[in-house]
Structure formats: C-alpha cells, structure tokens
Length: 156
Ligand SMILES: CC(C)(COP(=O)(O)OP(=O)(O)OC[C@H]1O[C@@H](n2cnc3c(N)ncnc32)[C@H](O)[C@@H]1OP(=O)(O)O)[C@@H](O)C(=O)NCCC(=O)NCCS
Image (cartoon, rainbow, N blue to C red; front, side, top):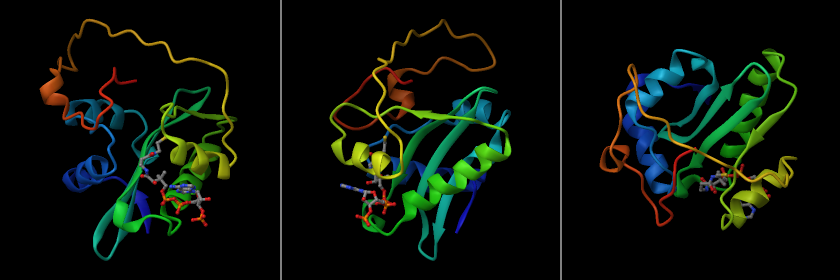
C-alpha cells in the first residue's frame, strides 16, 4: 500500500534511507517541508512495515523528487515504481507539467531505474550554496544531519 507519510513512520523511514545509503532528512527540515505539501511525501507499507519512501516537492512550476529508497530486502518487486506512479498522479492533480530529479554520478542502478520509468538525463549541473540559517529552521551540524554513506556531499 502506498500512502502519505505520518510522523510515527519517521524512524522506519529513516531506517530505510540508512539501509539504502541515502541521507536521512532531519526532523526540523521535514517539519518545514510538511507545512507546504505533506501529501507528496509517500511511504510504501507492507505487512512487515515501511519498505520504501519517496519525497516529492511542488514549487508551483515543477515537481521535484528526492530520496527515493526501497529497503534492500524488498527490491525488484515494483515498490519504487508504485511510489513513483502514485507521486506522479499527485503531481498531475496539482497541474504539474514536468518532474525533475537528481541522480548521483556513480548511481548507475538508480539511473537505469529512472530511465526505465521515462526520466531522461539532462545536461544541467547542480550548483548549490548554503545560506546562513535563521529561524524557524535551526542550523544542523553534520553530526545532527545523520548523513550516511561513503559519498558525503552538500545536501541539495
Ligand atoms: C533504485 C531503487 C529505488 C529501485 O527500487 P525497486 O523497488 O527495486 O525498483 P522496482 O522494483 O520498481 O524496479 C523497476 C525497474 O527498474 C529497473 N531497476 C530497478 N533496480 C535496478 C537495478 N539495481 N539495476 C538495474 N535496473 C534496475 C528494472 O528495469 C526494474 O524492473 P525489473 O525488476 O522488472 O527488471 C532501489 O534500488 C534503491 O532504493 N536504491 C538505493 C537508493 C537509490 O539509488 N535511489 C534512487 C536515487 S536517484
């Protein structure tokens, strides 16, 4: 079953992100995101619990997809495809004409997955700049971010 995220899912979703080598979105950042479009943060639920997650954001012009991850024990069962299709329907309902996402250069399997679903590489290069933090989102040190995996990088 695919449904919108609820706060009591957080630890399970964080565990899926960690198992998948994805950065865990800190709670304060997630609180901010959920004030805007909570219906675009989706989880896949099986009898065993949360098996996957996908974070969509809508800026009024484009849809963006972040942090798609499926627990390694549940891959190649169509869970990510179901998450993406449900999110696409929700974007369409908002009038979204195009969805963008980022794939790390070494993530060949991830790129194959996205291409299978019709997401084609564009030549753009991500540029990013951190801003000094003001309330309501407090500054997080790298330790607080729970970032994992071998490729620590600025978080987009
Ligand atoms: C990428 C990921 C989300 C795919 O999840 P999944 O639930 O296994 O994907 P699906 O079962 O829906 O796969 C659909 C199709 O995508 C392609 N695909 C998925 N994983 C693939 C892989 N590792 N290698 C090659 N093709 C793959 C296949 O065509 C697959 O269809 P098939 O199983 O009938 O061959 C999962 O492997 C994952 O969490 N990876 C780590 C995090 C990540 O890379 N996220 C994407 C960030 S951009």
